[in-house]
Image (tube, helix red, strand yellow):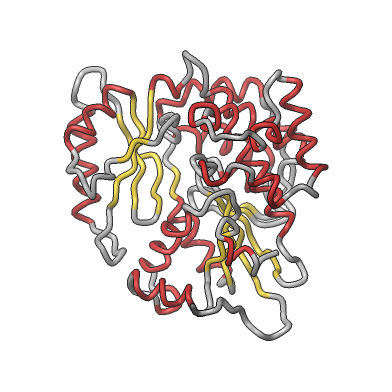
Amino acid sequence: MTELVTSTNNKKQDVVVICPGRGTYNKDELGYLTRFHSDKTEIIDIINAHRAQQQQPSIAELDAMEEYNLKLHTSGDNASALIYGCAIADFAAINRDKYNIVAVTGNSMGWYITLAAAGALSPKNAIEVINSMGTLVSGPGGATAQSGQVIYPVMDENWHLDKSKQDLLINTMSDINELDNCEINLSIKLGGYWVLGGNKPAIKELDKRLQNIDDRYPMKLYNHAAFHTPLLKDVSTEAQKTLKADLFQAPRLPMIDGQGHIWQPYSADKFAMHHYTLATQVYDYYDFSKSIEVAIKEYAPDKLIILGPGNTLGGSVAQTLINHKWHGMTCKEDFIETQKSDPFILAMGHEAQRKLVV
């Protein structure tokens, strides 16, 4: 087996850090905090203290359970805090003697983690925002009960974007939106995939109309709401009532949002940040592909580090790199060969790659 290597010189490598979204803490991640972060008691205690005030189980308790409970661990009020805790602890574990973090970005819920990692939200304010947003969409009458997300590929077998597949989704959404009681929209551009968000009747109709691919797609994302679509405008309104702009502050690091906009440490406005976080990105689609494009073109990093938990974002990031022929990569096979010799993407949820980061 080829040993993974990094540059042999002593100069720090510039890295962009990528924060994960919902759906990244799964059965294999159970015990992630215990395995990797038993020393990160300060940040985990802050998270647990906030959840205790809300009469919610601690993330330490959820992580330490003997068995993974799909309904419990993926519920928004638990998953958001749990993923944040794992990710922010991973961020703290990055070897600063080896890596110089030049910017932070993320996918979907990863924007909230980006705010925390970059310092735009203090640890106490971060868990207040993240836990509140996760809880707002949960419960019997919440957005999760009334809507959902579906993921579908828009690429070919070589990880090249396929415009005909994108057009198919656009036309299918348009047709479904003509039906009574149906609403569906683009939710996330995720490398070689699009995530669509809609109400339950529209999701059911979408499942009927899209061709089955590999007995896997269209894939419904369990316990997800129609994030980043107009269906979450009520959630946005409620969030803006309870979470004020004073929670935000200037970041210490540049942040790339879901529109590809860079929020700079010396010019980021807390009121604009508050509006983007609790309004724009809540009900407008999240272009993760654009955020990665901006990250590589603006910062030309030596590596991209993906925080855990999980290891699901690597493919989507790679598909974006291929789309822009980054480092000469033009297809899936190019990326696989690069990762074997001198990996450009280092996922902390991947055991061998994690060792190169901490």
